[in-house]
Image (cartoon, rainbow, N blue to C red):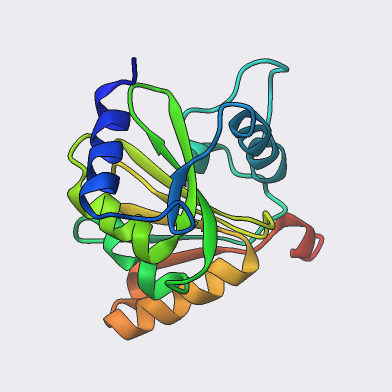
Length: 176
């Protein structure tokens, strides 16, 4: 039996009449590979079998990283940051368990607007070029140069560039 979050997402998906091409749960034989590739590409892994629950807390130093403090509900900015027709992976976290989906940001945004049981939301480029985390602290955390650039533009458009904090990759920093 699916937990309440998965049930809620599935109910909303059916209410919105979303086609699988726009939004679908990732199959049980696919999600483990997607999750592990996300961890390996973006996160510092300190133990062979333990994986971080909050991805944004364990991001690697060799990626551009930005954090934007949002007044509330950071998920509302997904369409502005990612093209509405772009296919991405989505993981939602509830009770320290990730549930994986794939779809277009437009459909993902519609789903997320209706969900009440979310802890964390992570959006991953299907080419693993960037990761965007919507934290339970109402902060957007982006990892990867492309998403950091988009976050810089969003912060300027929102009139809050001072709320955006950017760290460049350790490999790009000059030696001291």
